[in-house]
Structures are given as structure tokens and as C-alpha cells.
Length: 332
Image 1 (cartoon, rainbow, N blue to C red):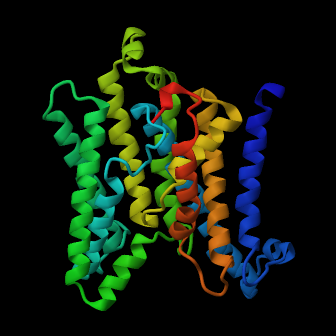
Image 2 (cartoon, rainbow, N blue to C red):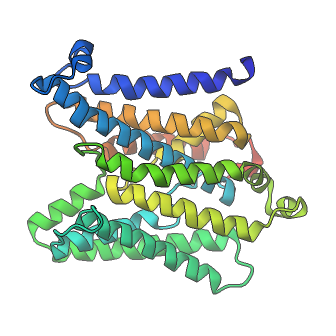
Image 3 (cartoon, helix red, strand yellow):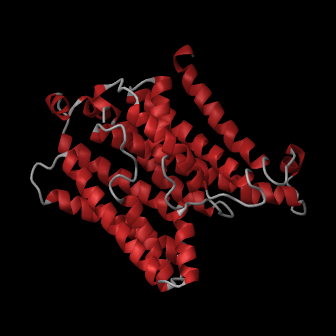
């Protein structure tokens, strides 16, 4: 029991945050109202139909983004790598901007036109980066990283072009989407994201040994029998697809994938067998907490959660950049 005490603490803390956060807000909800769950009780309706689904979506999205950041930091051996390093976020943002600009209002497989456009943009970014890396033999992680940065800048310029040519209403919608948000009603959104995050977490759990070796170095990993190119391709495609689905529904919520893995490394160490579950649980609780503060700090006005995470992420990024590296495998 003592060996897994840290995991129990992370699990209880994460579950407690998800259950406690919906009780906080402009209208404080009592536990009696929640347990009674009467259809005519506004407090129960707010809890079960609005706040609890929102907390669940925040947890699933935060867990997926944190796990993706952990995977990319190990794959690139770069402490500053994030889930959006390879242009997935900018691709999804471009797709959403195109959907808003064209006025796509129809639904596709239950997804709105903007969400479907964002998902298509994320898949386009993944295909372009993967195609660029395949053009070069023996492609290194550095080349993949540069390809992602190039795609990121190119898509960002297209987003600015669309905003410049759009009217005021569409420009505001695009800008609001780019801030990220979790304003959903019902459990449809978290249930759509959950299968992709679960599949991504299961895949990462299956390759934690390879992640440990990649963190040390590709040459050592290859000498230990790891198919480096195959593992990198598998991680890139699967993790990027997971991030694309999250961004298409929640918008680009930044810095979660940068901060959470590093905070968990300080707590449980760099071994991915411990780091992965800690990062998933902490990442989910972290985004739920950020969203709770964002929607209550300026009540009745809600602050987009992407703005709040950026407030936290900017100083954290500078601290991470300036602090002396403890592990040379993740040195910048």
C-alpha cells in the first residue's frame, strides 16, 4: 500500500476536485440539492446539466493535454515541448476559422460545423507535418519539430488573413474561439472526447518503457531494441490526433501540457511508469481548477479558461527556461 500511496492521493485529489468544483459559483449549490436531484430544483439542474458536465470535460481535456505534453517532451527530449508544438492547435484553429467564415451551421456526426472544421484542420496539420518528415530519409525529431513550427506559423498567418477579411461578428467569434472555453451543456462533449483520451492514455501506458529510453537518447533506445522510427511515428500520429479532438471541442487551451508534466516530475520523479498516471490525474484536476477560478473570479462574467492558463503558463515558461536543468535528457 505504501508503494502506491502517491497514486491513491493523486486519484482521491483528482476525483475530489471534479466533484467539489461544480458546487462553487455565482450560485452556491448545497449537497442536499444535488443528492435530491429534483427536476424542479434550479440548483440541481445547474449542477447535473451544466457544471458537472463542464467539470468532466475539463478533466478529460486536461488529462489528455497533460499526457500529450509528457509524451512530446520525452520524444523530443525538450523540456519546452508542448502538445501544440507540431502545429495541431494552429491547424484546428484554422479549420474553426474557416467554419466560422463560411457560416457552417450543419452538423456532421453530431459535431457542429465549426467543431468539424477544427477537427479537419487538425488532421490536415498532422498530415502535412507527417508528409514533410517522410520526404526526408532518416528524419530526426529536430526536423519533425521544425516542420511543426513551420506549419504553425503558416496556419497562423492564414488565420490572420481570414480574420482581416471577415466582418465584425465573425471576427469576434473567431477570436473568442481562439481563447479556448468549456461552455458546454450536457455530457455529450466529454463523452465524445473520452474515447480518444482513453485510447491515447492506454497507448502511452503500453510504451512507458520506450519513453524512458527515448528520454535518455535515441541511440541508447535503439541499442536496447526499440524501433525508434516506428515508436516516434506511432506517438506522433496518435497523440496529435488526441490533441486535435480536444482542441476541436475546447479550443486551444495552452500551457496545460507544459506545466503539468514538469510539476509531476518534481513530485514523483522522471520514471514514466509513475509519471504517466500522475500527469493524467494531475492534468485533469489542474484544468478543472483553472476553469473554476476562471468562471468565478469575475462573476457574473466568465473569463475564458485559455486566458487564465496563459496567465499561469507565461511565468512558468520563463522559470523553466531560466532554471538550471536537473536532467540533461530534458535540457533545452
